[in-house]
Amino acid sequence: MNDFLPIILSILAALVVVGGLVPVLMKARKAGAKYPGTRDANDPAQSSAAGGGTLVEDRPDAVKAPAPTFDGTVEDTDVPDDAAGLETIAIDTPAPVEGRLTRLRARLIKSNNILGKGLLALLSGDKIDENVWDEVEETLLLADLGTEPTMQLVDALRERVKVLGTRSPEDVKAMLREELIKLVDPGMDRSLNVERKGDRPAVVLVVGVNGVGKTTTVGKLARVLVAEDKDVLLGAADTFRAAAAEQLATWGQRVGVPTVKSDIDGADPASVAYEAVKAGIDQEVDVVMVDTAGRLQNKTGLMDELGKVKRVIEKLAEVDEVLLVLDATTGQNGLNQARVFAEVVNITGIVLTKLDGTAKGGIVVAIQKSLGVPVKLIGLGEGPDDLAPFDAESFVDALLN
Image (spheres, helix red, strand yellow):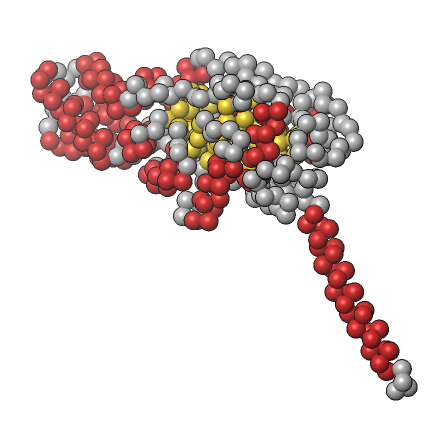
């Protein structure tokens, strides 16, 4: 028996080694399977272990085909299972962009805004003394106008009332309208940079914290662009929120817009963004819009990752527009969010959602004054076409109606 002992021990040792290698090899195979094939040698997005992007042709007439071998491009990719039944989805015709704000003004007029109603009530009284001016200041601050804009507006109104000596509601309303329009600043450039630049598409990056309606805003903005006859492609770089990519793809399906997304939970967002822009260049689309994961502005690592997404995109194309989505109901907290995001990426415009559900319309002024960045789009409801280009005069008129 002792003669066989060394042999038995040798066999046991060999089994231990093999048993340890099997899980390692299986783990390596799984890691290698996270991205379909090889990537370009110069690809800056390291996604072999984190997953990349797959082009989802979510048009109703898309034809399913066997999955091809990935050769560095994203053309002719298979429609994944989450697009099954797509043939039954009818493509919507988005509402025309022109006149959207006019149609949505009724909602803003009916909203619980204290800015216009409160000021008109105070300034139309028989007597305007110091107590009234104190109440005007308080009303403006409660409406999240901000301290500096509030003092600017009160000083201007006091001077005009003193000089004109008028108390009629019509005159007061006219003065208030003029001064509010000055504060909202109609001279700011609110146009969206969504025109093709030579041989590449315009690239729009959409950022913001969790819960502000970022993915929904991307979908609604896609409808706006389709209504303007733009050829659009979406990038689902929110790889952390469950079903975010599917939600975005569904928005795209409704208007015949394809989506680039990863089939792997927790994939590298920068890789997906890179693939989306690459697909947009290859397919010669007009606009690529990239949805990003909701980030808490006090989480340094996540904010750094957002900066990485932008840098990786810029390996292929310039980012033409960085839209920060803010919830109007958050008031001054939205202003704090805006400041932090502006430190990480160069914010070019604000999308203000849920404006019909707040009494704090003054946040429009506060954000613009603080950042020097215009509000370019506003959301006034939950409908698919309840997103409109922002117009200073129409906004003020709705507040004072």
